[in-house]
Length: 151
Image 1 (cartoon, helix red, strand yellow):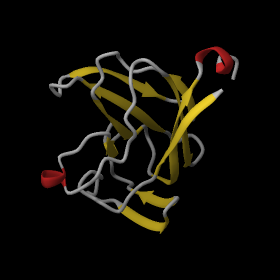
Image 2 (cartoon, helix red, strand yellow):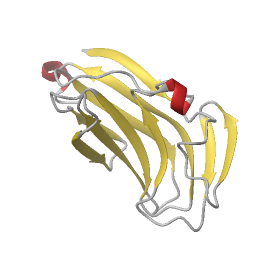
Image 3 (cartoon, one colour):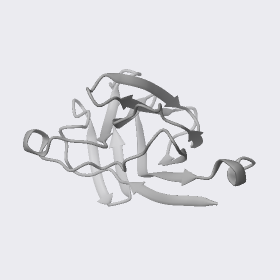
Image 4 (cartoon, helix red, strand yellow):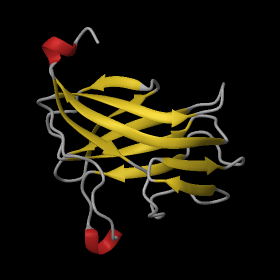
């Protein structure tokens, strides 16, 4: 049985996006084209937050609040050239903004649990050796451990 489901899109706010030498084309809400031939691997391309300081950042949180009690499934919908790659990293923070753990995802669908003391988290799209791609969405879904285990 699946629980709540949240879809994350690439918004046009650019302060949390790697812009140096990047060409970003917003075709639609669920179709963003990214191109940067000179960006080194390991660079954070785009970042989303579950908690923000609106007065400082001028953005609202794009991620749902999640907790260490539940399991989640993350689905990454990105069109990538063959033999090129992007990684997704989830970085979890406690209530004092100290890192409580992180997970790096290499597959398009992955199940995960966050640390129990998670208060907020960030989702980072990281260059794993690509020069361009088309980003559609990232879906986070709460899952029931017992019935979805064989998925």
